[in-house]
Amino acid sequence: MHTRAKNQLAIAGGKPVRTKPFPVKWPVIGKEERQNLLGVFDSGKWWYGEKVAEFERKYAAFQNARSGIACTNGTAALEIALLACGIGAGDEVIVPPYTFIATASAVLKVNAIPVFADIDLNTGNLDPKAAEKAITAKTKAIMPVHFAGLPVDMDAFKALARKHKLRLIEDACHSWGSQWKGKGTGAIGDCGVFSFQMSKNITSGEGGILLTDNEEIADAARSYSNCGRGKGQAFYEHYLLGSNLRMTELQAAILLGQLTRLKEQTIKRQKNAVLLDKGLKNIPGIALLKNDPRVTRRSYHIYIFRFVTEEWGGVSRETFLKALQAEGVPVSSGYPIPL
Image 1: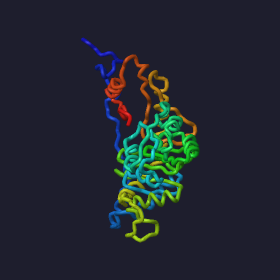
Image 2: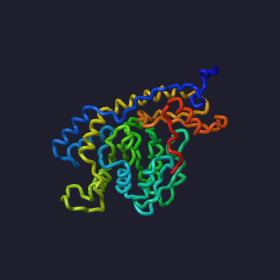
Image 3: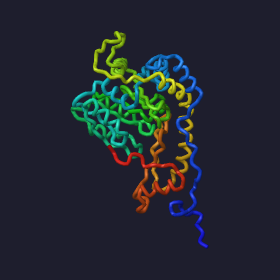
Image 4: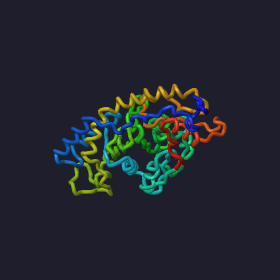
């Protein structure tokens, strides 16, 4: 009788390492969200109000920023940030090619031009040296992404922005709770934006926020997201061409509940990542992302390692992924092609 070898891979007919699915239930919902939602329902005030203002204050404080302007989603927050920073027709904005489409499409939506500069393979983030090479006379901003929650080299990008007199806009849509040298991402450049879409570490289904320490940017962002209304002006006075991109009280009610657990969840993600690092670091053909001591907290929205093709003797990345999936390990290739 034919018997399977103990160490035979599941993809070749062996027994999977894990046969029981991981108990992943997302999002995590607690009594705080339920109580907040019931309070909003009973109040009869469902659009922008006290809950949104409370969330703006608390999330800005959590990330060490002075001001927060909540909005409908992360994509809208990117567009608002660009407009509030004065980016418009013909301006160039340097972005990474390995990111969600909104990083580049938001630039196009404000009639500016996204210019791609390469990433650093050791971090998955925009390479400051590549970004500097992409600067031209038309460049007005750099928009690095803290990809998967790993902060970019903010010291290098701040120096680059100062040197060339550029706006520095942080796409922090993966980095809730991440810190660079003790300061929250999204609060280090001129402004930063976050997404609260369903898959994110803190979510209300959809939602976004812009953070900044710059009062002028904050006022412009609030106006662009609130139909062009000005600070302290009458309700039907619109001094610029804005849109209705306000967050609702219902979204904020959920996010306030989510925020109570965010720090604890982030620390747990970090601890889990340390275990994965220890298990993977000595496996040939797998390259872990570089740890930077200046990163004092990391959200680990996604855990990433790089498949080093040339060290796998002809095995493709696709075959490698299928083999892992056959073993019951939830893994994917990420973005299959760059923007």
